[in-house]
Length: 111
Image 1 (tube, helix red, strand yellow):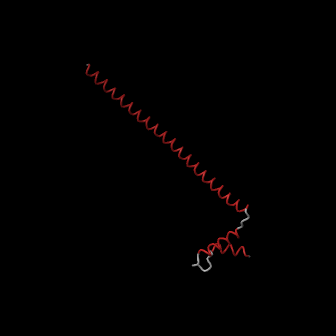
Image 2 (tube, helix red, strand yellow):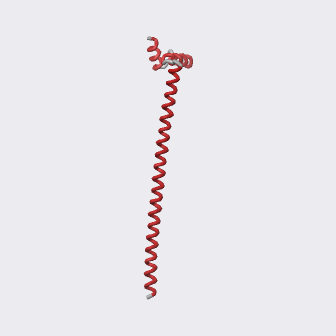
Image 3 (tube, one colour):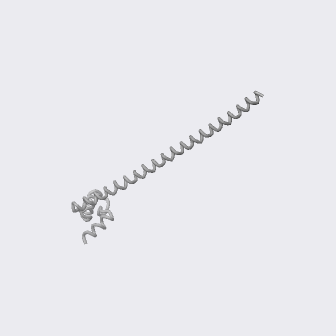
């Protein structure tokens, strides 16, 4: 009788231990998934912040360049003439040394 009771107790203890292990495994998975989800949210947030920072930086850089060109009164024609002179001095292999886009701008400015 004692043997049957002992085997029943051992069986119920094994089942309880199995349920405890199962619950611990489930809790570990939930904890891991919550940590993973928080990490993913953090990564997306920092990624969005990085893109936002890059967009703002590029905007201000572009704004600064255009604004300084307008402040100093440098027109597209002056820039193209300077670049045309520089490329003409740098490359003697071409016919006139002026790339097609600069040639187009300089002819527009001469008209």
